[in-house]
Amino acid sequence: MKKLLSLLSISLLALVLAVPAFAASKPIDVYINGSKVSFTAGSPYLANNSVLVPFRVVFEKLGLQVLWDAKTGTVTGKSSNLAITLTIGSNRATVNGTVKKLTTAPVSSAGTTYIPLRFIAEATGGTAVWNSSSRSVQITTPVSKDKDEAAITALVRLSNKYFNEENATSFYSLMEESSDAESVAELNESFKAFDIKNTIDSLEILDMKADEATVYTLESSRRTGGAYTPDTEDEYIYTLVRKNGNWKISSVESQSSSILLTREQALKPAANIPQNDADAIKGMITKYYQAMNEENSTAVLATMTSYGEEYDSSIKADLDDFFASYDITYTPGISNIYYYTAKEAAIYVESKDKEASEEETYEQGLIYILSKSDTGVWTVGNTYNVYNKLVKS
Image (cartoon, rainbow, N blue to C red; front, side):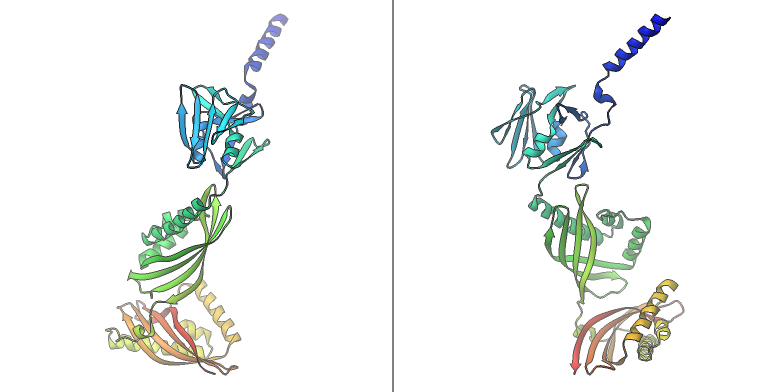
């Protein structure tokens, strides 16, 4: 029995020693510009202090066209300005015709040709960093300015395309942070309410680093239907980041916005409107200015459309702060209701505004968008500034 156990132990030991040393090791992960490479033809492995990988997927990820000569066992990766050639079993390779020495020759196993990863990374102008603790290789290739500029421009224009198509899910898919269902639902509600076509009139990449870019756009937004909103011209700053090898939109900040409606257009013949609605709309605007002159935030809020308790409380707090900081007298003048439906109207109002502690008087041309409630009450929703100028000093 003792002999039998001894023989069994020897057999088990032989079985363990027969398993390749790397079989029990953690698989090697390869990342190219932050994006993990998926290998289907075979797994990367370590030999002679070199990581060997299936050639095709790596060449393709590096933007190289793959050529394979089965007779000679030669693999070539080509681009417009680069040609790399390696041969199975040979420790000599060529880069644009120049012979280079390899520390580890390409090998063939189970129908797959493996090539040394570091050599390929460096031959394409990149770097390869081996992390022994995570058993991973990070390949970083040089930034292609032309390629990145094209990708960034395409991304911004694609976001505009999805916006115009009212495709909220696809629009948010271009963002750095993944959107939740609530954000998508809110954008879809906005699409239902407003029909707007947005055009990117000009686009300029202001700054571009390896993983971040800043883009300036001049855009015009024109109403094609739905709820009323004046046409605008807007300046935006986009911040983009490279995430997992792809550019994503991190943020969009409005720099300025101007109304594409002139004073003359706003004073065109009045909309066809029932007299009772015209009187109610102008009466509400009068109440609004009276409340502003009285610095009565509660009364001002009563003339405005309610969007819920939290929103109303925030507006009231802003009004309280404003009245505490300024003492302005408003004198409304000429006005014209130039847009009207049974539930919505737009009125253009000019007013002269004077701060008590200042000598100057300013004139403003403003657009007030009003909506009619189910109880028949008109209230102020949005306000837009057409112009603001000094008229007296």
